[in-house]
Length: 244
Image (cartoon, rainbow, N blue to C red):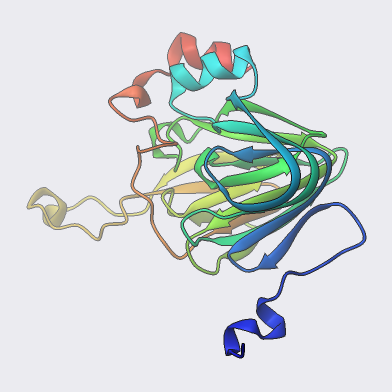
């Protein structure tokens, strides 16, 4: 049988080392010899002896935080020996390697899979309030290991070495050590009072030393990772409890 479908670029990529790697820009391959964590429902194929175990949000504490904040990652533990392929609605997939001392703040909706050696928690986005892409809260990853994140389209990685401003609906992830806030981008005036707007009323601000990943697509607040149904207003005591 002959077809361009069977060209070398479409054949399964092999590696001698286990771990997460790209099969192509929209498909993640995990060469499994142990375990890793993945988004529930992201598996599209697997070979070998593989088990899948639902974990909710990764423990009781994270489960409760997810229920209270609307943020988190519905997880499954993938264990065994074999090859597992994952995807998320044909989104682009990118790999980030964290080392001790690193921290990554990321919208939970953009987490596809990560090494079980990584730690994560649900934290309030300081200063951003309801303007965050994920509402008031993001997932913060620390430790040593690899994480696969998704974007809609090819992103730009901005180096934060000067005041940086990003549409909160396009911000995917950023260095956890950055200081975040919000900035009024649109000037108030007669046109605003008459209902005319640029559509860029507020932006997230970033300061410090690090990076911000911005996708070429604006996700509306709410939905899976957002603080939907009025949950943006749960700052206060809840924010103080979860921000620790």
